[in-house]
Length: 61
Image (cartoon, rainbow, N blue to C red; front, side, top):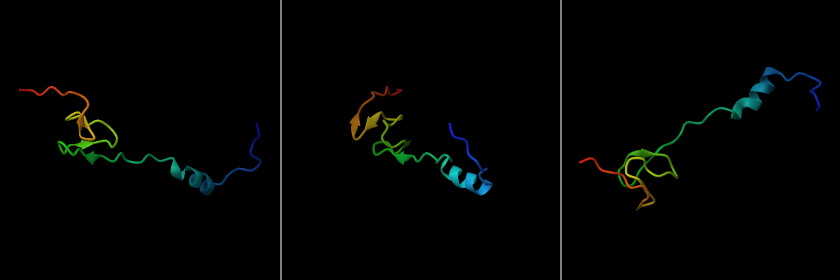
């Protein structure tokens, strides 16, 4: 495996690491119950995805 001959500067190291940070998770509103949910996921509150009920949620009465 090849080894680098010269050391990379702090500036070059930081430019390489500029894309390593984590982006915040963006939540969108569920069209059924208007609670925040992750995009492309089943709503944890009402159990619907794209207008259809996927997971039956038991309602507390």
